[in-house]
Image (cartoon, rainbow, N blue to C red; front, side, top):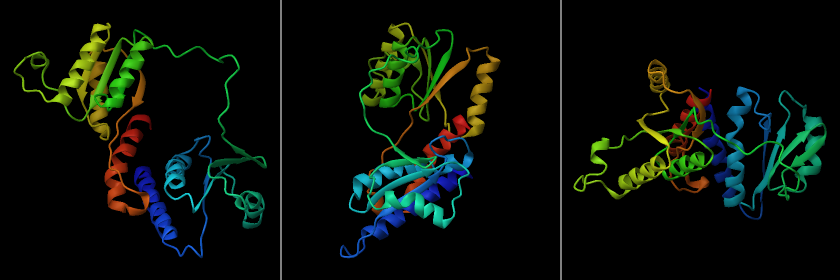
Length: 266
């Protein structure tokens, strides 16, 4: 699958980085990566390569001595060896330490600059008649996101997570035995509801297409408001240097997140 291909790619790059980091410092090497069409993200092939952009930042932070940069060619641009060398020659001699986009012979990189122009569109406003789904909605990031949506007019928010909360009748019970983390989630939901926001909590593994489709079908059958926005806030922490991880660990950590993102948006 596309998800498995992306996970394998992540693991293979980590192996390459590990091998280069172990080289004799008297014989250093500089690592560059090349992608195609990721900037526009207009194809499945570009989507499969997109994890490399995230890895680029990790490599640059953990192994700056060997990191050169990443160059993104246009989709469908298959230069031969000579033309590719000519295009990349001026860049390879000076590490970019960043992501560069090669389009029409020009090498573009992102830089921070002050925004002085007038906004090109209005500030995001949520529709009060619509629902907004947050995956990982009962985590720290998900609850912050729910508050952010409420600030922008959302009045129906769905918090989805793999672990169900206790029944509501236990939420205010003094002797309910709720742990600190669960109490924090409940307090955050109560705070949203005090602002006039209707909050639904759903125990849902968004990595399962069948589970997601069943959830959407039940909402349709009940005549629930349409979901007009989805924010993927699910995550997990498994701190490890890139040079110390293996494919099994990459699969265990990265695959669920990629699979859930694919299930929601593909």
